[in-house]
Image (cartoon, rainbow, N blue to C red; front, side):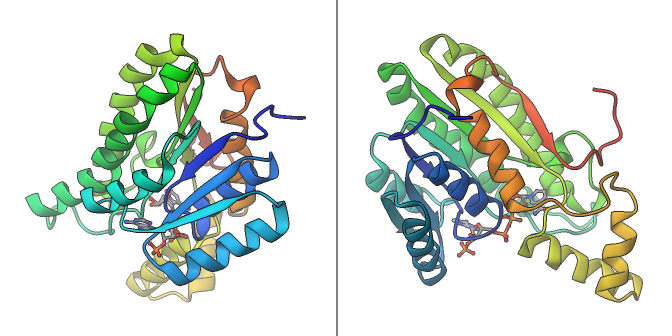
Length: 259
Ligand code: NAP
C-alpha cells in the first residue's frame, strides 16, 4: 500500500535507536525526509548515514536533549516547517512508589508530558495553516494498564493522553491528526535494561527473567522496532486521516482488555 506521504518532511525525536529509529526507518521507506534527534551525536550520525544509504531520503540530525527548552529550540530551528512530528524521549526510571520525590515527578512530567506538549504547540499551528499534518506520540501501554515499577511513567504519560484527547479534536478540521502509539514490550535497549534490573531483583538470570515475562504475552515474544515503526507510518499516512485522538496499542495483545 502506498501511504501517499512521499516528499513530506518529518521530525522524529529520540531516534538514534529503538522505537524512534523504527519510526524513522518506516517513514523513510515511504519517501519521507527526516530530521532525527538524540543526545549522543555519534550514534545519531551512524543511524542517519544508514538511513540515507538504505532509503535514499534526505536526513538531517540535531544532537540535543529534547526534554530541555534549549534542546528543543535547537531541534526546532533545524526542523523548521515539518508535516509529521513523532514525539519520543527516554522513559522515566523504575522504582518504588514510596520513594519518588516531587523532583522525580517533575522530571518525568517534563520529559514525557510537557516535552511533547511543547513540540505540539510549536509545530501544529504551522501544520494547521498548511492544511495537513500528522502527530504521533510514543507513549506506553502503561496508560492502559499501569506497570507497578513505572509509576512515574504511568503518571506523566496519562497526563499527555488527556492533553491529546482534548487537543486532537480541536485541530482535526484543519487536516491535522494527533494520536498516541502505545508500545508494549519491544526488543530495544530499554526493555533489556528492565529485564536486567528485574533479574537482579528476583535472583534470576536475564534469560529466565525474559522467559517469565513473555509468558503473559499472547504472541510469546517481544515486538520489533520495525513492527512498531510500521504502525507509526500508517498513522502518518493519507489513509489514516479519519483516525483522531486514539491510543493504539502495539503489544502483541498483552494488555488483557476488551476495549
Ligand atoms: P531506547 O532503545 O533506549 O532508545 C531511546 C532513544 O531515545 C535513543 O536514541 C536515545 O539516544 C534517545 N533519547 C533518550 N533520551 C533522550 C532525550 N532526552 N533527548 C533526545 N533523545 C533521547 O528506548 P526505546 O525502547 O526505543 O523507548 C522509547 C520510549 O518508549 C521510551 O520513552 C520508553 O520508556 C517507551 N517504551 C518503550 C517500551 C519498550 O518495550 N521498548 C515499552 C513501553 C514504553 P541518546 O541516549 O543518545 O539520547
